[in-house]
Amino acid sequence: MALIGLIIFIIAQLGYAGSIRMVGVNKYMAWITSMIIQTLLLYIMAMLNWLRFGLRAVVILGCILFLVRMVMAIFKIQKIPFEGFHYFDLWMIVIGLSLGTTLYSSPLLHYDNYSHWALIVKYLVLQGHLPIASDAIISFTSYPPATALFITQFVTWVGFSSGAMLVGQFLLIWAGLYAVFAVLRDYTRSTNAFILCLTISLINVFNIAIRMNNLLVDFILPVVAAAGIAGVYVYRHQPWLQCVTAFLFGSELFLIKNSGTMYVVMIGFYLLYLLMKNSKEIKWFKRFGKSLGLTALTMVGSYLSFFWWNQHVHATFSTVSKHQISTSAYKNQLASESSKVIMKIGNKFLHQIFSLDSLSTRGFLLVNLTLITAWVVIRLYLKKPNNLLKVLLALDASFVAYYLSVFAMYIVSMPYSEAINLEGSERYLSSMVILNMLLATMALVVAMDRAMYEPDVSKRGIRSFKNIITKNTYQLSALVLALFSTILMFSEINGIKYRSTIGKEELPVELNHIAKQDMKYNHTKVLVVDPHTADVNDYYAGYVGKYYFFSDKVDGRENFMLSNSDFKKVVQRYQYVALPEWHRTFTTMLRKTYHEDYKVGLYKVTSKGLQKVNQIKN
Image (tube, rainbow, N blue to C red):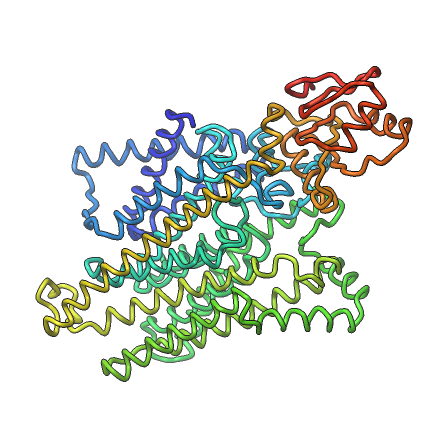
């Protein structure tokens, strides 16, 4: 990692975060908000075909903002009050550094890294512009580029590598999770803060299908949405800042992935609710009309960035890619599927969501049981009013709506072979579980704070407890929560390390052992010989090869049961052959055809045989 580039990038983040705090942005919201602002600036630059300039200009602007703040501080032009440093801040820093260093040394292994998410970052870094129609290497042309743009900015300054990409994404995730602490009214109450820390640890259990060592957005979506909802709550008495926050986070969610629409809708409904609740208008219809107008204006504004992206996709690409929003494609898909097929997929989907073996179903039950139990304790035992049942009702409604949207996706935009097997279903459903766990916990700690013995935060201190028993219980619970949160997070870190260790025998790591990664977009014909049939049949070998050799003409193949002449014809179709792992049939056929014993490596195809090289020459 380029140390100087990293320092410059950090200074830029300090500049952006510090500057937006000067206009009233909450300390805990500042980091994710500033990252979203940078992403949207990069998006505008990319759409205007100024991405290469933007990748440097956005960071340089952050550094300028940092210098301006330093000058203002030196001459005491404006001060930002120090809000203190708390135990959970230290927990986030220590765990964040541990996770970051682990991710930096982790390889990318998941299929979808190579089918799109890592590939698009590599493309943006090296090409300096969004994909165009002639770039056959990019398959998922409709996927919005938000997270890829921020990651691209990071690796542009610190150096391109799998680990650097993971760290760039992790900065977005960790900043989003840090934002949930903004809902705390009293930062000195460690029990409430460590309940949030415990939830941050627990959501990794429901993210097990992806984990943070992959560049997939199914974890980023709920984290950013939770941060956005936290911001809407925190700024409930500042309507203009509330609407700006909803606009920024809504725009970001739209541009992370098409499925971000559901999360934007949730932010919109919550914004409307709080605007009405805190409106100063006396008459109901005026309060509703004004709140609805502001909400509609904010949500329509956030949609404009996505509308621009859709127009760009339709204007640039003639074909409809997988998961692209297309009315005509949906009609064709529905027309080709009978009611019997839809019922078959529906029955399988219902079986999954009602099965206790499903991780997402367990998460749904955990959210419900936690909030019901908390309501009983606070309302019936402590005799304090709270809105946890209302929150639960809203979260369950979002569960139902999201589950229906996922089912609709399987029906209208997925091939039957994938839909009938509910491919990726746990990954999709767990996203809503993660979001609602974060939202439920935020509601819980707010209710707990309001139910405390001393309601006035300014009067709280070491003696503001009902009795010595409650004080000891509070201190012990804070310690236990901190301990369990830490144990769970280090368990996640060890899980990532273990996955990296066993991944040393997988194709992406093996290719790194036989050849240098190609960093220039090319059209070289490469054959990746893979002894694993499944990797070839699901195109994993081909996608990994396209990413690694950065060519749109890479094929993966396992079957070489051919005659000598046919085998030679197959090999001669390509310019290079990558043999990352010993393949019995391929090695035998090479010996018969070219009378040489080839081992693992990268080989250039010549008329007389194969010549070993260490990288492709374009």
